[in-house]
Image (cartoon, rainbow, N blue to C red):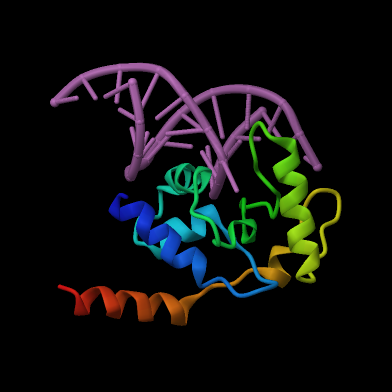
Length: 114
DNA sequence: TCCGTGACACAAG
DNA sequence: CCTTGTGCCACGG
C-alpha cells in the first residue's frame, strides 16, 4: 500500500453520512492539489468498508468508467443517505463536506508519528 | 528509469 | 448547457 493511497483512504473514511467530497478536494486536502486523477486511481480499487460512494467529481456528478452498475449503486447509496440526485448530479453547495477539522486531526496524528 | 494510462479539473469555444 | 484541449501526477509494467 502506497503512502498516497493510504492517505486517501484515511480521509475518505472520515466523510460523514449524507455528505460528499470531490476528487480534487481530496487531493488538495492531502497537500497535492493537482493530483485529482491520482485520487481516482486510488479509488479504483478501494478497501471494503470504505464509503467510496461519497466521492464525486467537481460537477457533483458520478464519474465511473466501465461498470454502469456501479454508478447506479453509487447513486442508490447516496440517495439512501438523503442525498438527492437529479439528472445525474447532486448539489455540491448543499452536500459538500470540507472536512477541515478532521484533516487537521489527521495531520497532527501524522506529525506525532514523525 | 522511462512511459502510457486514467472513478479529475478547469478554461475556452 | 455542451465539447475539446491541456495540465497534472501516482501507479504499474
